[in-house]
Image 1 (cartoon, one colour):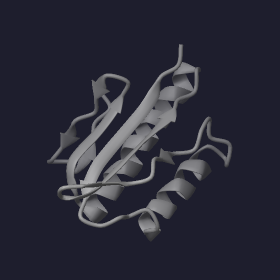
Image 2 (cartoon, one colour):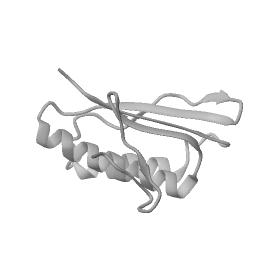
Image 3 (cartoon, helix red, strand yellow):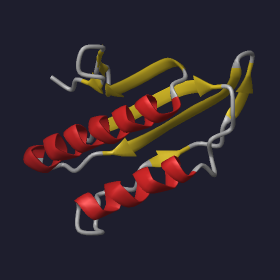
Image 4 (tube, helix red, strand yellow):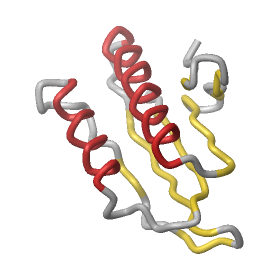
Length: 111
């Protein structure tokens, strides 16, 4: 059985080509010695009322220890993206488990 990390947010701009999005993809790959189970995948942004819906998903490793590391790394990188660009309607989840935003730490909490 596989699990995935899902992420989405709305931003006034299309961030597809932003330096931050590219940096996050590189950091994700480097975290796993350039051999991640799967890259952080983003669907093409969808135009919505408040801007653009950015969403994606990444299949996590079947090994629970590696999966947990990937969840923690993913939450950290997505937290960096949120701190840098803001946005609305953020959601980060592992399957149906929502990783809440902790305002005091400015981080998504995978616990």
